[in-house]
Image (tube, rainbow, N blue to C red; front, side, top):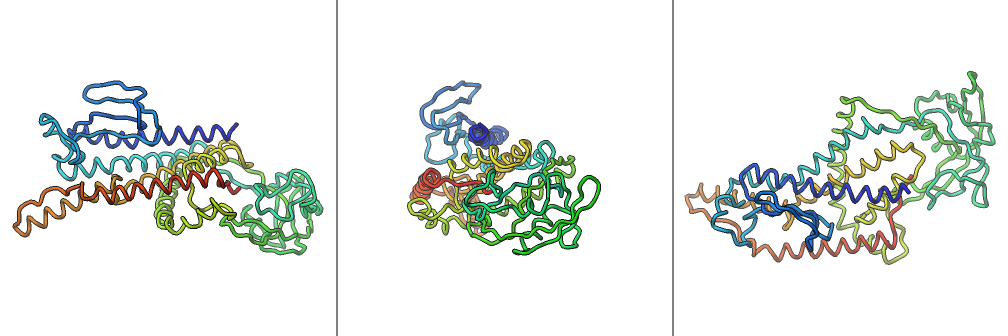
Length: 409
């Protein structure tokens, strides 16, 4: 059920992002006196529209984006002489730059608002030192499995060291091998690094401290990057609590999260060319899907459903994780759209910067204004980029269907 909700939620947020993107262009164009004749969500045949003033608002059949039509955006359209004073290209360069960048700016605003909202409203999960579950058995090998603890014992399980040593739900971990612990993360890191040997664990139960001596086992597991590592296993889970932040703390977290995601997006974009051969192998060969590799819209929808449906975190935490994923997607779209490639907004910005730089240089040299760039000469490069983008999108759809990504929990 929650998987379906997650997929629908992803589609709704994506369409909302498209509307905000186009509204950014529309609002700034209107603010500077430009004429906008159409504001549509989707492409293709018109399903519904309504005219308000000089603008037609509506929805089209293919929900693959949206657009706002501003008179005079390119030289490739005919303009009514009466609209010439309000044409895009007749406005100052600074105003045109603001209009072009406003779409991506709205993606960044939405992402930042989500990053502020998540810790305040939905909170973060915090693993305490109190034991939640102690199963009878643990897997001998967790690679390829979506959980670290089995629900029943079977041929591919072994007795859990924690259960055998007497750990029980409700116990609070005090120390490991004489070292007092402050966080669950500190405890699990010490366990993983301990190796296959007996350790001494002190727990607090019913107001008194008990000393237990489990013998750890070593288990093969995926490390989240597609590699298999060896780690010692105890066989317990932590009790999870939800902590919510105040406005000031949430704002600080949002700044950190936004900065991390913003910089990470540039790194991800730089890795796209090198990731394509691996994506071919993962789609048409036997290579497992890289959890940190390229993912298309179908794969993101699947992962969105997994975020809400899977895992042991409380529902508010899973909703927060879903919204965090949506924030990251908006940052990626915003940055991608600013790449200096036509027909992206960043391509038009690059042309604008070139035109203004050339105009100022000619003025300094005492030469006449060279005029605007002939976009027709740039169309072959724009078409090549579109072909490559469409090809990559088709490959990603195929990969997401044939070898869908899996959420690593």
